[in-house]
Amino acid sequence: MNTLTRRAVLGGALALPAIRRAAAATELSFYFPVAVGGPITKIIDGYAHAFQQENPDIAVTPIYAGTYQDTLTKAQTALKAGSGPTMAVLLSTDVFSLMDDELIVPIDTVAGDPAWLSGFYPAFLQNGQIGGHVWGVPFQRSTIVLYWNKPAFQAAGLDPETPPADWQSHAAMAAKLTRREGGETRQWGLQIPSTGFPYWLFQALATEAGATLANADGTRTDFAAPGCQEALRYWIALGKDGVHPPGIVEWGTTPRDFLESKVAMIWTTTGNLSNIRANAKFPFGVAMLPAGQRRGSPTGGGNFYLFKGATQDQQQAALRFLRWISAPERAAQWGIDTGYVATRPDAWATPVMQHYAAGFAAATVARDQLAFAVPELSTHDNQRVTQALNDGLQAALTGRKAPDAALAEAQATAERLLRSYRS
Image 1 (cartoon, rainbow, N blue to C red):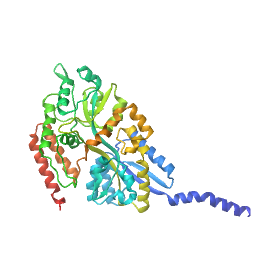
Image 2 (image 1 turned 45 degrees about the horizontal axis):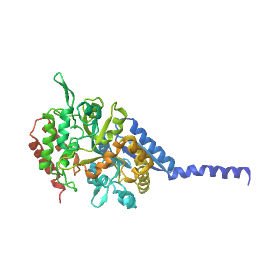
Image 3 (image 1 turned 90 degrees about the vertical axis):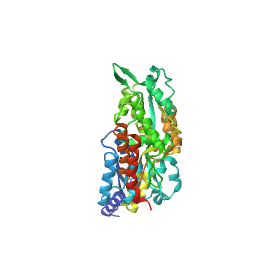
Image 4 (image 1 turned 30 degrees about the vertical axis):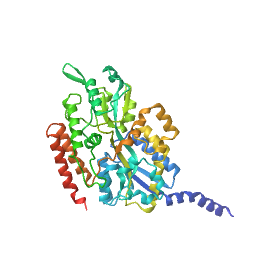
């Protein structure tokens, strides 16, 4: 072989892997609900990079699209224009809207292996199990939990290691924890936020009162049920009794109020756990929500959805990514880094999670509460249905409407919106 021929062969051999990589590379993009850069984006970027290192034939690009609502709107607009992403993390409750717009593919029709999907906690699959199919892969999932300030409990003469177990002790402890000076409230006993996701916090109360807000088909609601009325009256009474701020409580400022000792107990997502752990200057506890007739919390948070516009190669590449990112070791690390609940029982059996939970038992509370969890309120035309309930709740909490009337009006609106979805 002469020098020229040898160079040609060698050059072709060296170039071939690059050619193959370029030819075989499958492009994936996914929308992720983050409004600004920060720790979460760094974690997701790290996952995308690590996956590509292990799977060089797949290129993954996360796109940070704003709030959950922004992300849904952008995904719907882009997909309808034929230029959308392959996947997105959207609320588990967006499933009916995505199905009605014929934008998503049932994950089980692509997955092939039913054992993978059955490995998630059943409570996290419930919102996405519709019509005999599984439509979403649980990812950043949560329940509502109670956080309490242990030094505040001790100062009020309460056992700092014992949170309220039921509604009665919840209200009684909130009264003891409320501290006033010179006619001003220096520390509220309790805050349950009523912006952002009012229906979600209300659903916890309603569940504890024995009510079910909607049927599994997403075609009927029962907002005016006796349990819903009892739940809303209890919430309002906390404000009237002076142990909870009157009127509207902001979702976004509730964790900060807790960290600044402006409130001794708060209800919020377990997704705030890492934030509170990193920034609290005092010992705090995490507990299941107090029981009414029963314990209970709706699940919450986002699922990965796979869009119909994806090619067959993209679908298979997306499946590899979804299996990779939801693997036990990554589900465990995601839970540790963010405070969201690791979505699979086998994630809790990993050494890293066992070590973490042994040193920080609060991390297990939301997981254990899954035994009492219910699917988050989700219906067809979900945004308008939940908005009707949100409006009614806020009207009642501010005293603009009587609680029973506010719920009846929300139910009437939901009935009008959902009637056409019933066969």
